[in-house]
Image (cartoon, rainbow, N blue to C red):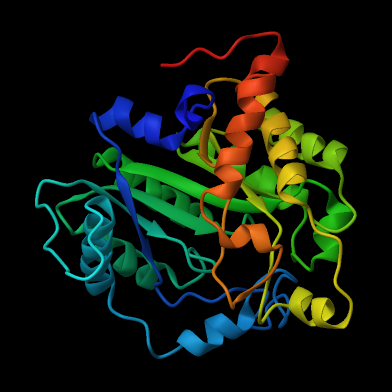
Amino acid sequence: MGLDDYVNTFGSYCKRQYGERIKKLTIDAEFTCPNRDGTLGLGGCTFCNVASFNAQQGQTLSIPVQLADGKVRAHSREHCINKSRPAPVSSSKYIAYFQAYTSTYDEFNRLKQKYDLAIADKHVVGLHIGTRPDCVPDEVLDLLVEYQQSGLDVWLELGLQTSNNHTLKKINRGHQLAEYRQTVIAARARGIKVCTHLILGLPGETNSDYLNSLRTVLGIGVDGIKLHPLHIVEGSTMAKQWHYKPMQLLTLDEYASAAAMLIRHTPEHIIYHRVTAYAKKPMLLAPDWCAFRWDGLVAIVDELREYGGQGSALNGVYKTA
């Protein structure tokens, strides 16, 4: 049994919507961030890889080329082909995912131009926008409503990371919970689906903090959740600290236990877009288990199998779709 047997996953959501899983094509549209361009700060969030961002400047491919390359890679992975580059299947459906940095942080017309380039691809059926909760003006929300009304499956992905204002300040996030609350309420009032990102293992936080963040997010209102383990990557402020004095990070078992706990405390209708994440060496410094794509997922499934699936801690038993 896999994750879909215990969790309301995004893959299951796509099957219900389209009859198949939909591949995400990530896009780097050369956005920056107010926490690195001097508007709020210059150093960025302490876990963010600033060096990687700077190295990519001037080298980013056009959005149509990124989509085309993403289709080839997705099709190659699907058929386990490593050396050849077959053409993508023309009937496939895709989601355009603006992932890199703050993907609503630009002049409005430039934003619209970038989004329009992505959705011009006839195989794109969804648009996911990753951003900060303090960088989503009303005109952008209204634009997303227009895309949604045109038939696209639109998700606004907000990086909250934690509801603890003290931790947000410690990691130099540059915003507090209040901005997140305001943006979520405004987005969902327009019918825009919101997916919230949470990081487990932030300095000083424990299981009670993770659970409080989840309950806060659920109380405000949310449609989807992404969970990430804190991991240290080169180029981040945390990496500099790590080289001087390594900090205590969650072990694989600790992370799996915490993630499964949150899933059990999540109502069944909430969609989990992701329950773990990984990074590649040598960019990844620690923890080592984050270098392996499937280890975290397998460990979480084991926890859910033993102690119960999504919603089971809310006096209910998870029922598969």
